[in-house]
Image 1 (cartoon, one colour):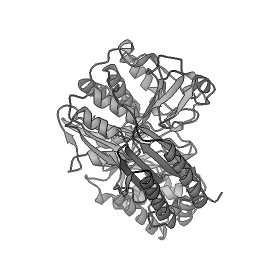
Image 2 (image 1 turned 90 degrees about the horizontal axis):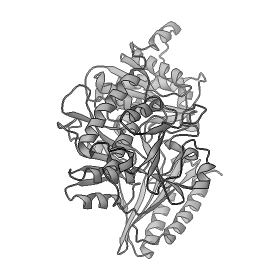
Image 3 (image 1 turned 180 degrees about the vertical axis):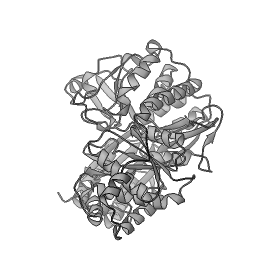
Image 4 (image 1 turned 120 degrees about the vertical axis):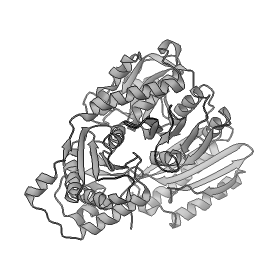
Length: 541
């Protein structure tokens, strides 16, 4: 029985059609469509499975972003939760990291963020957090999914009057995050300063005289630029004029290896890219968050245009600026193959590990064995990154002294990188080469570890890489059961070829990562060959 959860929660295109619960499940599985009926099922299932989570009590905190159908989805989720005994707290519109903070602030058993992150505004979904602020585990998601299917077979009618009553939360804290998140960021700025050094101003760092900040028309757009200006960072807000979440703005439109010439940037539809001024090569000129505010990507000037500064490069900046510390560091399998070696060589005391894709795996890898807080008076030297811009860093607990949670927060990443840039971090990272492409509208159920196409592709990759002089083998990563990752080593360096289904959209991703001295052309040809074969097999086009 398959789980409804992908890489980061449940997502789908939203519809407010009134359908029965069996149909609601079918529409999500077959048409990737999320309805209020399905959200009520999820609410009930979360309450029933809540006792298996850490913590105590039955309080559930709900926050959401500015998507048009979220009010109806939140009401249905609240109905399901309250119908089955949960105490529900609404904190209004917020970012995903705000919701993480609220779980700790309200001492909740669970948190639910209603969002689809960087997906188009026509989509929405749900991310689930436990009492420590960690995202839900695969095992828990499987149990929730099983319970949803079981509930849909039962008769659980509720009177209309009771539905209206139960769809209203037990507590409503209007605009809670607009006060709390900036205050939380002030504490985090102070922690970053103690680790990376104080802000020295744009004239002494890699940051351009004016930094253009794109909040994706999300929650952070209203408060982040004033916060930065108050810290002495001269910046200017840029979002698409339509005011629509993720529309022609935000980090969701970017890829880690993306570049623009000056002419291409001026003609771009993206609100940030089209506004960027020419600057000295290497200067950070812009930064974009995604719609739910849990990641960011910087843009730097080049000799002939602009280029994305991805999570790999940001991690190198952070760890070089904090080189006096011994870091615990995690990077996903899509990061530059040179990154872990660079981190290890910068300080032999650094401990590095590679994880599955998804910031939850970064947190799970970096958290204490007990699964609770990091306990230390000062900010622990702990960092996890994905090249997509997810950067997991410690955050101070709202109530407990010397206790730190782990969270990905685009605004916090922005602040940390600015301070690291002011300290000269990131100058010595010699990148490898990587390329990522996607097969869109793929039938993802066709790609799995037991499928004939999977086994055929694995053998092709092993054969070709061995012909190219690499000692190649398939690697297995916890949390990525249907990932095909073939890793090869030779006298020239490392080559890695990965194929995985997107957990959030109907596409299958192919990626190649190479060390700097490995010849690129044979792997570009291999990538095209595999793409052509998989497109025929995984799509109906």
